[in-house]
Image (cartoon, rainbow, N blue to C red; front, side, top):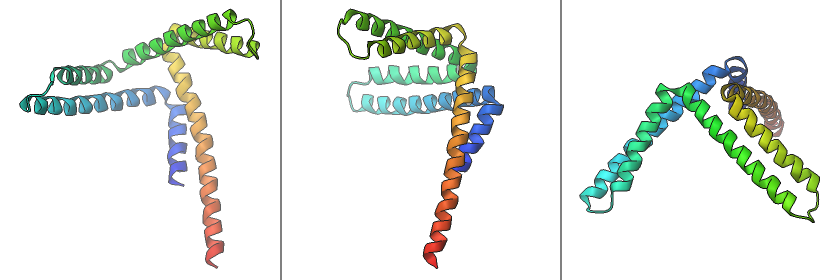
Length: 169
């Protein structure tokens, strides 16, 4: 039931305050990157003391801390860039899939694969053209799914409680 309640709370927040959810996720992600970077820094310094290779780990730790700071300070721009990269990736994958499908003369369900490739390209273009609004729509969709999941989990919890009481009698 607790999982259901948490999902319902997230779902409501995602539907009512999608921008705040996005910013919160970016800040938490930034903090996580900084912590991971600091842990890598400690390990790289230990490796240096042990006279083991440490340069790449030091570079990784600096990069992670820098990315974490960027994610916190410029969260909106970071989200836009991330969504743009995902959109570009989707366009490239869709184009490669479409090229492969059209190059194969005998392929079952060819129409399905062509539609899938075109949808991937369209999805990518949508993300690249309007990245921040696309993220808000995505967050709202996850909110709807979380609400549905939360309601189902709460119902399941009540059902389990009823079954448990019947078994005790």
